[in-house]
Amino acid sequence: MRRLLRSHYGGLGILILVILLMPFAFPNSFYFDVAINVGIAAIVCVGLNLLIGYAGQISLGHAGFFGIGAYASAILTSSHGWPPLLALLAGILISGLIAFVVARPILALKGHYLAMATLGLGVIISIILSQEVDLTGGPDGMPVDSLTVLGIEIASPQAWYWLVGGALVLVTWLALNLVDSPIGRALRAVHSSEIAARVCGVDTTSYKVLVFVVSAVVASLAGSLFAHFSGWLTPDEADFLRSIQFVTMVVLGGMASIFGAIVGAALLTALPQFLTVFQNYEHVMLGLVMVLTMIFLPRGLVPTLALRLLGERR
Amino acid sequence: MAEFLQFLFSGLTVGAIYALIALGFSLIYNASHLINFAQGEFVMIGGMATVFLAAAGIGLPLAALAAVLIAVAVAVAIERLGIAPAKGASAVGLIIITIGASILIRGLAGIVWDRNFHSLPAISGEKPLVILGATLLPQSLWIFGATAVIALLLWFFFARTLWGKAMMATAYNPLAAQLVGIDIRRVVMLSFALAGGLGALAGVLITPLAPTHFQVGVMLGLKGFAAAIVGGLGSGAGAIVGGLVIGIAEAMAAGYLASAYKDAVAFVIILLFLVLWPNGLFGLRGIERV
Image (cartoon, rainbow over all chains, first blue to last red; front, top):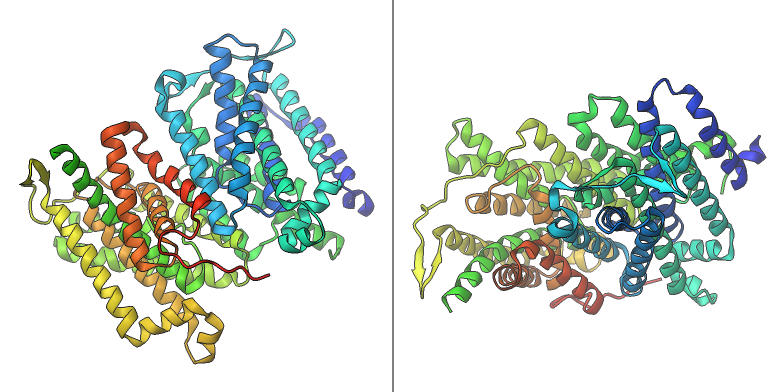
């Protein structure tokens, strides 16, 4: 059991098992709804965690990429009649391209400066999305067509659940492979000491650019799924607070822990849905969680628990 | 010409407000090399607390003073309860703590006060002065005056007082400062207190011109940070020049280009500066140690 937990792929097996078994415990479709939202947030967080947790580069603007994916899907399918899969790929291409173009100059920055630059980028994207009223419907939002894959319309909560669950498993598997590859080791070297990594011959800039693009593309994919799932899209999905929520999920679950990112996404997405007392206190709770996690659990929930349970020192 | 002058006046007015906020960023950055993302919330507290204390029957000047003191207390609380216990946290960790604090404060403000827009009466009425065809509100003059006085006071504080010199010493080299007997803990606390007070003052002054709301601090804080970066983080003169640059650029863009994209201007400027001149106009070249 210990070895199973310790190996990454054991974790993947557990994730698949949880996704397969969970529906049997769902009393009604509301639970499917919550689980789908958890899955979408988790996809973003797995990608973002590669950047924050493994490469040690913060981004306060990833909701921007989520928004680009969501709006690409919404606009291209609803206003231009594109097939959803093509629109999703277009969103990925746009996000990836923007991320690639800005990554080099932005990732040369460090700490606060990097935080501010990514934040600026995200805010600019969200302002464009809410000001281009003709294209996006402005702050009121726009309707989105339902998702059809290979001629089959994904409509029921169950179908969405399996689709998002499958996407999450796929993204997690890719992330695990990336982390275990030479790229992953290079990223962790960048995290510990960028200069030392460079001295050892690691092309730190290229790796940082790569992981930035990967995380942006993953966020865009999740955004596309979200747009079709929710059926109505507003610029709020791309704003600063959303970016902060994603970062908080990663930090709460555990930086540099792929399953931590999923746990963080699950907690912060599901709790406000089930505890309706949260409604008015959502901001207060989010803020408290952020401050308390950083003070008392700087490594995040999953790594801290793993350390306790497995008595493992890394 | 009159049109240009009109845009310039409004740019200078908001610019002076951004300058006050940017000064807060620089003060805290100098004392602790930390970016306080909750800076904008002090501005919100300044406006909202004044509105609600005045509504409770306290005279306006007293309400404003109390609002500033509340912001100072909140600022010190952030440092004591959020920053100090997280000793040794990474830059990312500290960023997350201050963002968390700002969201927490915003949430509390929405609950303790309300979620509506509020305004305050202008200090010397609403009758505008006409200068070369452009109008200037008396409140703008108050804002210019207050910013100038604050700049002078801060200069005096840093150049002439023992506490100010202790803060400068800490900014240059915290370890050396500690060795000569400077209590860094108190220096950091003082920097938060000053930043809280400056932010709240900005909030009190701008509320007659731009209504306050529990979420107003987000944009104001971010733009103040943009101003601090443009001027060079940690530079007092830079903060003021940076504030005016952002304010004027914003007003000109809103006037001549597209008012819808007014809010984006500050962020485009930040990105340009971060990429091309990360040390800002007045900043010292940073030296990174391994």
